Length: 615
Ligand code: G6P
Image (cartoon, rainbow, N blue to C red; front, side):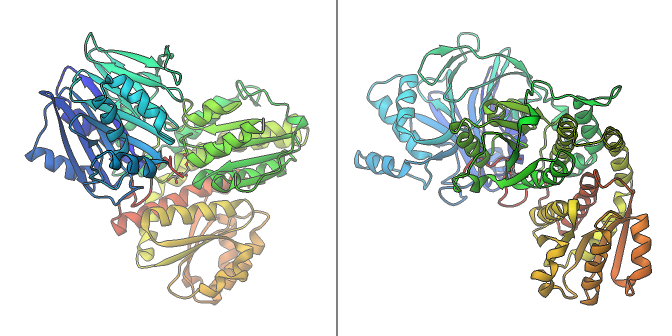
């Protein structure tokens, strides 16, 4: 969602701001803008649409200044037009904002009564007018911002410039992330360290309610205040995100790069958990007595939710523990009954998804034990949880999650084996062979990726489709859901995933010549039944794409009469334990190449955001 950058420098910041915003594009946005202070004036340029429009505007109307803020906006209050684009400003201040001001309507009415004129439909503009009002009453910038914060309800991060204080940038967070970047003669603030990764790795994460004053004079310093207004120090860290890790390298899209990174990141993630010598899985800093647990609830959104659905199969089978999987946005509306002996696992790539965070708050209010699985260890979810497991996927820039998903699966697979072993559910021989299956996975995935050209050809027959069905049975069912989600996210083809057994309970009515069906049909314990579903689809004239292995492919060829209606992709035969991870790769490649043929904006699909920080 919205991305914020602020820069205090000894150089002109216009091009820096644009560069930083480019690295925040992945969050999803529909307008952008920057502002600087120079010659005791605020200079501002904004544009609807992609950053290219803003850059074109700046070519004709450049702005000067060594201090500035920038923003990519994902519209919530008001259309995605120039008037609603950030920064919002008065003559005195300019503000960029991520999040939502829940009481903006009442505040706006009060300010209008006092004579303030509004130019946009946004909630953000009330912040500008409140700060301006306090400045007019004689407050200094810091005091004016602090007073404004007490007026605001909601979750937000802000960066603010002042016409009459051209050396100062103030930023603050309350519910939305903000990180400071520190360098000699330069200070940065952003929603994500990715924005300034090529310039500095020295970072400081703001805590909830923190406010920071960045000053150019004397000597580029910053002062942090906590939510009570007291000066505080926060630890400096070295960010793992480098300029290289956020580049597209030779790939045409981040998504493709991230798909191809999967063998490496899965191997890294496995190595962080597994001692290869004694085959033991160790969860650093996670002290949970697995034997006392009677239930696990997994809570997540989007693709992370599907990772939870896969984990349910693993935990129930290999760890003998009951699992519920919950959509985070619904969890808190159900008055969930929580067993004192249960554990909640929250899965979130970003660690910032607002609904997952809200579920976490509810769990903490009930003093419930929470384990977070995140890709960003400094994220809000990681900080609030009792225990944290990390995926080592590295920054994921493509909005559609790929390597973060399979890395989540890798951690969850390890966790199921660890719990199964500690509870004595899994036999030692089985444990060893399943660990070996995980060790073999990166190599298997590399093999699938070597044949990525096959998916380019297969994609051709999907480009005219308006609807598409994905079927899976058993542990590949959640991957059918994930495959359908990937396709709709990036190609805009309507797609649904179904448990193959549910086909007859509705979706079969939709099947005709125009609707391709993708079936995940490895030769596993569920194959014979899936084969029957496959026959039912063929009998109704649909074009079928079957993702399978050699043994199952032979059976299909023997038993299905109209093989001309079927495309078969043969994947390596694997233990059903690791099927969900391996079968994710073909559905990712298929979605990618279909979207490529359709010419959509693959890395930033319309209306979607990478990090969903508003409800
Ligand atoms: C958004 C993203 C998805 C992601 C979901 C959950 O919808 O576009 O790719 O799966 O949020 O995000 P999280 O960061 O909590 O895993």
